[in-house]
Image (cartoon, rainbow, N blue to C red; front, side):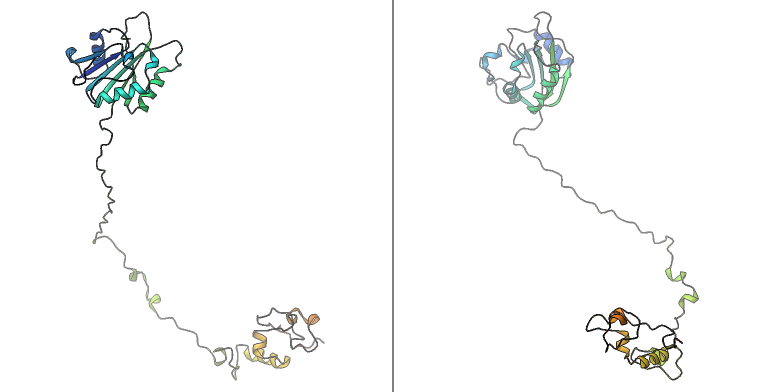
Length: 276
């Protein structure tokens, strides 16, 4: 059979000797496929002898209908060949007789095979068997070839990020921050006056000192320590701050309470008061 140069609307492919063409074309219309004239159909029977190779040009048919008596023929090779002869967007209606050894859900298996070969919109159909041989059970699957072909390309729309425009209403009720200030808030703060003895740590107490510096200086004179030794005490042996029990005989801090090195030594208020 040589139909290489022929172009038709539909192909009927079966491994049977003969099939009722009128019944098949009626079933095609019922399946929602485009109506096909009877004289515009290529029929290939006993296709098993072709060994999976159709003598037909690529993209020749709008519809391909298959009727298999041997379910094992519905394999990757035949589905790929059927997809080759279908036009882009063409439809396949595949029917296969069920054998006793098939799975519980043969329709799911058939649908998966079509999907793996690139068919789209794959679904099962309720349809009577095309074969007239006795009381047989069959499954019918419908699929669609993609509208694009291998190697085709198309431009992708570039996503553009739109920055939302913020509309500012000049007449909106905006609050003036300055209006929230009171007259009391606007007054310049008055800094407290400092005495001479409070200006710096190196100044001596003034004549009429009332801040307590004169008393601190008097205590320092009694113990014979400088202001630096009191404000930033240091220790060569590291034990001066622990108390008299840890201080040597010549320690300048003897008689003072324990302190932390580097921190000001605080003298108690009754430091100069006699114990008796």
